[in-house]
Length: 166
Image (cartoon, rainbow, N blue to C red):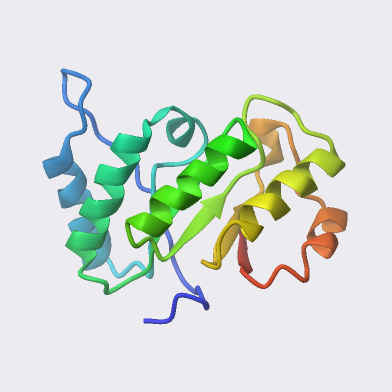
Protein backbone atom coordinates (compact mmCIF):
# COMPACT_ATOMS: atom_id res chain seq x y z
CA UNK A 1 0.00 0.00 0.00
CA UNK A 2 1.41 3.37 -1.01
CA UNK A 3 0.45 6.20 1.32
CA UNK A 4 1.95 8.95 -0.80
CA UNK A 5 -0.34 8.43 -3.79
CA UNK A 6 -4.04 8.52 -3.05
CA UNK A 7 -6.51 7.65 -5.76
CA UNK A 8 -10.11 6.55 -5.68
CA UNK A 9 -12.80 6.82 -3.05
CA UNK A 10 -11.97 8.00 0.46
CA UNK A 11 -15.21 8.42 2.43
CA UNK A 12 -15.24 10.57 5.54
CA UNK A 13 -16.84 8.14 7.95
CA UNK A 14 -19.52 9.32 10.34
CA UNK A 15 -19.14 8.48 13.99
CA UNK A 16 -22.02 6.60 15.60
CA UNK A 17 -22.83 7.17 19.27
CA UNK A 18 -24.84 5.20 21.78
CA UNK A 19 -27.85 6.65 23.61
CA UNK A 20 -25.41 7.35 26.47
CA UNK A 21 -23.35 9.66 24.22
CA UNK A 22 -20.38 7.29 23.99
CA UNK A 23 -18.76 5.96 20.85
CA UNK A 24 -20.63 3.03 19.35
CA UNK A 25 -17.47 1.16 18.39
CA UNK A 26 -19.26 -1.99 17.23
CA UNK A 27 -21.43 -0.02 14.79
CA UNK A 28 -18.40 1.99 13.65
CA UNK A 29 -16.59 -1.30 12.95
CA UNK A 30 -19.57 -2.53 10.92
CA UNK A 31 -19.45 0.68 8.88
CA UNK A 32 -15.74 0.20 8.19
CA UNK A 33 -16.34 -3.38 7.09
CA UNK A 34 -19.19 -2.27 4.81
CA UNK A 35 -16.99 0.44 3.25
CA UNK A 36 -14.12 -1.99 2.69
CA UNK A 37 -16.48 -4.59 1.20
CA UNK A 38 -17.80 -1.88 -1.14
CA UNK A 39 -14.25 -1.35 -2.43
CA UNK A 40 -13.21 2.03 -1.03
CA UNK A 41 -9.57 3.01 -1.49
CA UNK A 42 -9.08 4.73 1.87
CA UNK A 43 -10.88 5.79 5.04
CA UNK A 44 -11.11 9.21 6.65
CA UNK A 45 -11.76 9.09 10.38
CA UNK A 46 -13.59 11.72 12.34
CA UNK A 47 -16.28 12.71 9.89
CA UNK A 48 -16.21 16.01 8.19
CA UNK A 49 -16.99 19.60 9.11
CA UNK A 50 -18.78 19.77 12.44
CA UNK A 51 -18.16 16.26 13.68
CA UNK A 52 -14.37 16.42 13.57
CA UNK A 53 -14.38 19.70 15.45
CA UNK A 54 -16.29 18.31 18.44
CA UNK A 55 -14.82 14.85 18.94
CA UNK A 56 -12.34 14.60 21.80
CA UNK A 57 -8.76 13.50 21.24
CA UNK A 58 -9.53 10.26 23.09
CA UNK A 59 -12.53 9.59 20.84
CA UNK A 60 -10.42 10.23 17.76
CA UNK A 61 -7.74 7.90 19.09
CA UNK A 62 -10.29 5.11 19.55
CA UNK A 63 -11.74 5.69 16.07
CA UNK A 64 -8.29 5.70 14.48
CA UNK A 65 -7.16 2.55 16.29
CA UNK A 66 -10.42 0.81 15.39
CA UNK A 67 -10.15 1.76 11.72
CA UNK A 68 -6.54 0.65 11.45
CA UNK A 69 -7.29 -2.66 13.15
CA UNK A 70 -10.41 -3.33 11.04
CA UNK A 71 -8.78 -2.38 7.74
CA UNK A 72 -5.79 -4.60 8.47
CA UNK A 73 -3.64 -2.03 6.65
CA UNK A 74 -5.40 -2.82 3.36
CA UNK A 75 -6.20 0.87 2.70
CA UNK A 76 -4.80 4.16 3.99
CA UNK A 77 -6.50 5.51 7.12
CA UNK A 78 -6.50 9.30 7.39
CA UNK A 79 -7.31 11.32 10.49
CA UNK A 80 -9.45 14.38 9.80
CA UNK A 81 -8.16 17.63 11.31
CA UNK A 82 -10.83 20.28 11.81
CA UNK A 83 -9.33 22.44 14.54
CA UNK A 84 -10.01 25.89 15.88
CA UNK A 85 -6.39 26.69 16.69
CA UNK A 86 -2.99 25.76 15.31
CA UNK A 87 -2.07 24.27 18.70
CA UNK A 88 -5.10 21.98 18.52
CA UNK A 89 -4.29 20.99 14.93
CA UNK A 90 -0.73 20.04 15.94
CA UNK A 91 -2.16 17.91 18.77
CA UNK A 92 -4.18 16.04 16.14
CA UNK A 93 -1.05 15.53 14.04
CA UNK A 94 0.76 14.12 17.08
CA UNK A 95 -2.20 11.85 17.83
CA UNK A 96 -2.20 10.57 14.26
CA UNK A 97 1.53 9.92 14.20
CA UNK A 98 1.49 8.15 17.57
CA UNK A 99 -1.39 5.91 16.45
CA UNK A 100 -0.10 4.99 12.98
CA UNK A 101 -2.38 7.10 10.79
CA UNK A 102 -1.36 7.01 7.14
CA UNK A 103 -2.03 10.72 6.73
CA UNK A 104 -4.49 13.53 7.35
CA UNK A 105 -7.37 15.41 5.81
CA UNK A 106 -6.89 19.03 6.82
CA UNK A 107 -9.43 21.84 6.92
CA UNK A 108 -8.65 25.54 7.40
CA UNK A 109 -9.21 26.87 10.94
CA UNK A 110 -12.74 26.23 12.21
CA UNK A 111 -15.13 28.76 13.79
CA UNK A 112 -13.06 31.68 12.54
CA UNK A 113 -13.06 32.98 9.00
CA UNK A 114 -9.35 33.39 8.40
CA UNK A 115 -7.97 35.66 5.71
CA UNK A 116 -5.61 34.32 3.01
CA UNK A 117 -2.46 35.04 5.01
CA UNK A 118 -3.82 33.32 8.13
CA UNK A 119 -5.14 30.36 6.14
CA UNK A 120 -1.79 29.87 4.42
CA UNK A 121 0.08 30.09 7.73
CA UNK A 122 -2.24 27.57 9.37
CA UNK A 123 -2.10 25.02 6.52
CA UNK A 124 1.66 25.37 6.05
CA UNK A 125 2.37 25.11 9.77
CA UNK A 126 0.34 21.93 10.11
CA UNK A 127 2.01 20.43 7.03
CA UNK A 128 5.43 21.27 8.43
CA UNK A 129 4.56 19.49 11.69
CA UNK A 130 4.55 16.09 9.97
CA UNK A 131 6.08 14.12 7.15
CA UNK A 132 2.83 12.21 6.62
CA UNK A 133 0.79 13.03 3.51
CA UNK A 134 -2.06 15.53 3.71
CA UNK A 135 -5.28 15.98 1.78
CA UNK A 136 -6.61 19.54 2.01
CA UNK A 137 -10.37 19.95 2.25
CA UNK A 138 -11.72 23.03 0.49
CA UNK A 139 -15.39 23.66 1.32
CA UNK A 140 -15.78 27.45 1.61
CA UNK A 141 -19.57 27.37 1.48
CA UNK A 142 -19.74 25.46 4.75
CA UNK A 143 -16.89 26.96 6.75
CA UNK A 144 -16.44 30.37 5.17
CA UNK A 145 -12.75 30.12 4.30
CA UNK A 146 -11.57 29.29 0.81
CA UNK A 147 -8.31 27.60 -0.09
CA UNK A 148 -7.64 29.72 -3.15
CA UNK A 149 -5.39 29.06 -6.15
CA UNK A 150 -3.03 31.68 -4.71
CA UNK A 151 -2.79 29.75 -1.42
CA UNK A 152 -2.27 26.47 -3.30
CA UNK A 153 0.53 28.04 -5.35
CA UNK A 154 2.24 29.13 -2.14
CA UNK A 155 1.89 25.59 -0.76
CA UNK A 156 3.24 23.97 -3.94
CA UNK A 157 6.65 23.26 -2.40
CA UNK A 158 5.08 21.50 0.58
CA UNK A 159 5.83 17.94 -0.55
CA UNK A 160 3.44 16.22 1.85
CA UNK A 161 0.34 18.05 0.60
CA UNK A 162 -0.67 15.45 -1.98
CA UNK A 163 -4.41 15.81 -2.58
CA UNK A 164 -7.38 18.17 -2.40
CA UNK A 165 -10.97 17.33 -1.58
CA UNK A 166 -13.10 19.95 -3.29
